[in-house]
Image (cartoon, rainbow, N blue to C red):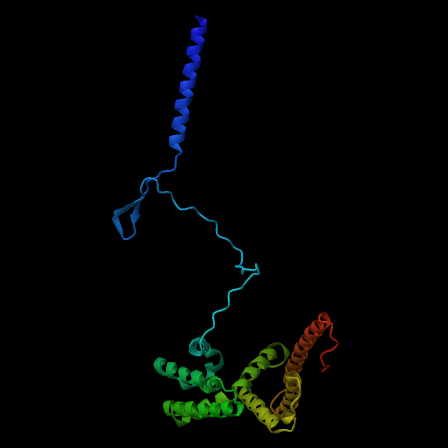
Length: 307
């Protein structure tokens, strides 16, 4: 009797185990029929037939492709056609022109105040000024692949004269005379701005009239340099040329400013030119140090020339 009870108990446990394992297997089975919506038509369903299995997922490889011999290959960069390159160049120039137009107030604020144009006319003048400043860039664009420097200079001057004549017609002869002088002395105005900022802690401030006189003197000094023999000497390093140029401008500007500036103002101008010359020397030294280190790494004995 006891034996029968034990046998029945064992049989009941075995049956319960079989039922549990069957339930567990069905619960975790991969479905063989999947219903998904078709993009663009939620009413349509795409159903896998029984027995269809989802495609195996292959992990993406981040290795570079190889040739039949096993050597790694690299994807060649896409080469743009000449028309595509020209298009990109023109798009880049258009962006630079827009950026310059938005920044003109820093250099031309006095001019704009003097002309007192309407908002619409001022916008037109700004467009013309940008074209004037981009005269050289426009010349090179029109030359295309040519590297003719002489022709580029000729076209630059031609572009400038055409744009200046457009400005003359737009604002009139009297206003144009002021504009042209302002434009031609723009580099000197930028330099004078730096100098007058130094006067705030090195010397007495300039009056507006004296400031214009100093700008004219700096412009006259630049023209004297261009006419001098020093400007005709071409050195192997542009840094040497610039040092010679600023030394000439310093001496000439100080000479012509004796009658309009005080001693402290003259000293401040001298400091300005000396600092500029030292900055050029420092830049040249940085370039030389980099070059010498490069030669040393390559095992070459070809040091940069001392300036």
